[in-house]
Amino acid sequence: EDGVDNSGVSKEKLYSTPEDVFAVYEGLQPISERFMIAAAFGNVHGVYKPGNVKLQPELLDAFQKNLGPKVGYDKPFFFVFHGGSGSEKSDISFAVDSGVVKMNVDTD
Image (cartoon, rainbow, N blue to C red; front, side):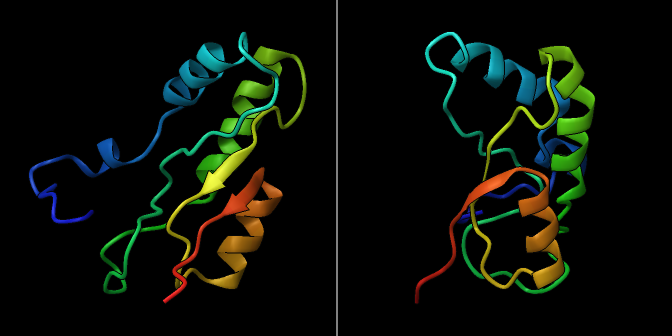
């Protein structure tokens, strides 16, 4: 993104993990119960050719399902969908169902 060469990085490293999301939760929850997490699930800023990035909103659903019991309730996370421009309506809908409460889109 933004001219950074990630060609030598494993594609798995470009996505948030449950451990990443839980670490953010643990860090912010003592400060306030109200915060949003901008997890990386294949969302990017800017315009990219189709196929360059694989949007995986199912990761957000998995974070909710896997970590919800750990924190004591269903869907404990509020997510931000950065770089949503050009996303398929079905992916946006699934992301919202999985906890996205804020979405950034290109306003050009």
